[in-house]
Image 1: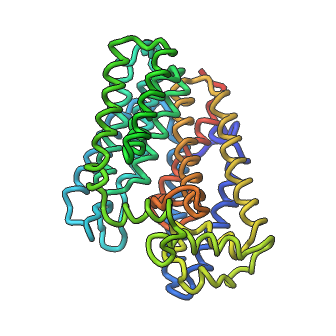
Image 2: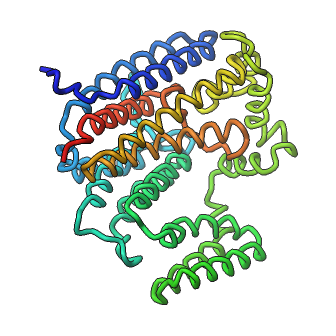
Image 3: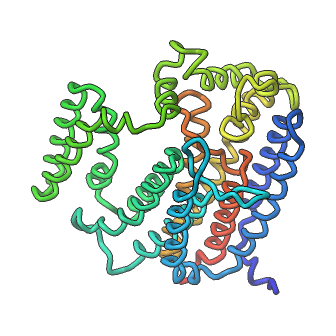
Length: 403
């Protein structure tokens, strides 16, 4: 039975923003799919209803239960990621469990499992990050799902694990030089495309490590790791799927190949730009409505909003997202329970990076990496987990003044 106490300190602002985002999402999904299939819109409504039910469940269950259950939740999510890799998949991609009437993406549940366990570990009063080796277990928690999802392959979702983990480590007070060491191999991999850029980057990290007074037994392994990753660039590039290589090339040189690798990005920019100040109107999109831009109701849903609702529609959407992140941050910093704070940071970082990645790739400031826009894009697994995160955030708000 739901008591009045369950809704004490309930954050109606978070709920209102979420409902508004869901309304915008439903309107956009209907507008971009009604000519194709009405079932897509109906399935989105079903997933939202299920997601709201599960969000209520996660809101009512005490957070201390999720802390105690975190290791089991994480283990289940990792096993699910392994099992999905053992499946046949489609066109070399193994991301979903096919349940007949629907498909489910275990990487979405793994996001929750990762932040649950990492929040539980980082909230331990006896755990302090003094040396680089203290990061071994936290990095292991992040790296396992990161690699499993990367193998599927799903580069966009794998980056979310990395970013959320770094955000939680930053909130813990991890020295910035250690956080730089974590992300530096990715930069070295990019610089490895040309030996001069790799050499310059190695000199830069050497200077950073020196002035940060990094101990020699941390300096040498970190430096060698970046050197090896940079040298392996040609091999690692060759391991990418052809469509992944095409997306990166299209991002860097879209104007040189407008009918090939750069097609999606160029069409997305045209759609957003053609909307003007107030847009062409709902159901009036031409770029999105006549399939100039494929999969517009999933990865490129922001393009449809730009075309049909214009600059003002995009602005309202961005204001809603930033208001959600701002209110969530206020909840996190006022929470008196460390586990709740770290969990909240994990949730906000996941929602924030997905928003940035999706809007970034539709506007051309990031390569096309396949990240759904929370609460807006069509997709059951993402919607389901995003609403669960809102339920958890409201749960944190409810208990933020308790010890």
